[in-house]
Length: 65
Image 1 (cartoon, one colour):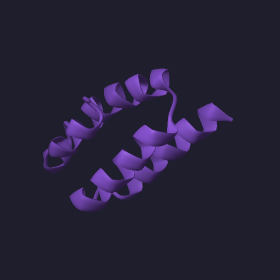
Image 2 (spheres, rainbow, N blue to C red):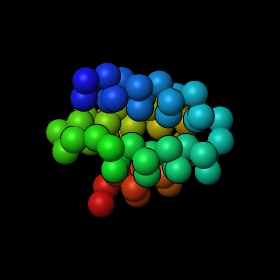
Image 3 (cartoon, rainbow, N blue to C red):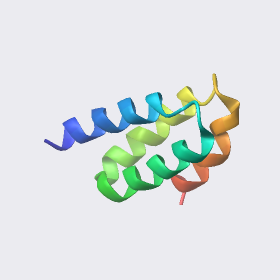
Image 4 (cartoon, rainbow, N blue to C red):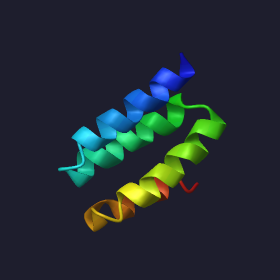
């Protein structure tokens, strides 16, 4: 079940990546719902994902706490 939440989070973040404000809000929600090891995995995914979308890099502050 937890793995499904991680995959769902990636899907949602991908779909809202057109809007940096919405992306940041969804990222904040994800950090409260995922397990610690999933947050680390999400952080790595986000580093790769934001290479193509530099306008989202400021949102990484929510995952690097």
